[in-house]
Image (tube, rainbow, N blue to C red; front, side, top):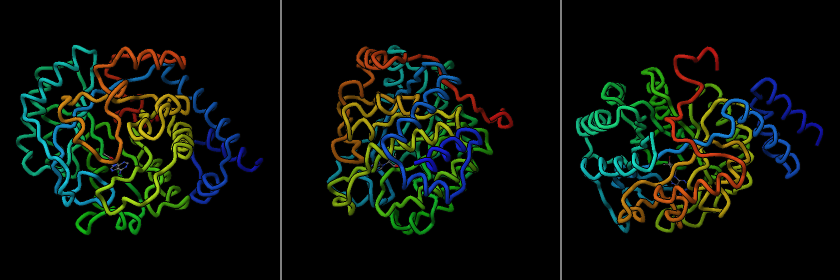
Length: 356
Ligand code: 5AD
């Protein structure tokens, strides 16, 4: 036990551990150690962000995807997925609704939908930028070449979410089709950073074949990339994918890693993800109490919400929906935090890299 506490102190003080130390800490965690970690993570979070919890309106605008990731419910070869695509007007209507509800960040997420070409996305971003000059625009539309990322940025996108999924090349290959590679994924992230986006990355906790040693590589990569946001959530099997019989990741490990990430990158924006809310009714609140400080309610039109199914039983009612701001506010207040409606930029901004 002492050795583990000493590692948490080292992480807290130096903001880093070696790969071996990470694997050791992750394998040896106990409920008592986790409670201690969470208390330090909460202090760290409060030091930089007070009791503020940021909200982002998530618009899942297309579930068409040309990729075939083995874990994902909207993979190309899932013929049972009910496909939809929102047009520009429908997306703008979501933004207007979200704006009235108090959202000042819109996250536009989709599968890699070939009919949303670079030019179409540029036009979409331009329109949102023109209509909502005081809002942040976050894109989460997968892998593109650097010049396309640059065009989205020039059109007005501020932030980009692209999980690295797993750092390790062999592990990456077990989760993805041949056409995708860990190397290219990481190159995309470096390109995004270089352009000046606020970048978010992350991975699934308990993904098939994951080990503490592989998670250690993920933690080292997070430290190296030093992103503005990190999204992690448990892997949850989807019944129409090759991983349908694989066990889900646990809330317990997800919370532990949230606490570790808060200590390693104290200024990072850390969402309590939908997947975390899906595996446990209090997942989101417990995420906040472990170091998370962002929630991303769903702003997609009611009619399509049930179709953006990356995994089974995904929540899309209650405080998950943007229309239930009151419930979200109450639940957040009940654990001593408050929802804020600013853009919620990271304190670890690209231009301040030196002071991160
Ligand atoms: N369980 C949990 N998360 C998933 N994602 C995709 N499929 C699943 C699943 N079955 C995550 C991936 C992706 C993000 C949008 O959703 O990490 O990057």
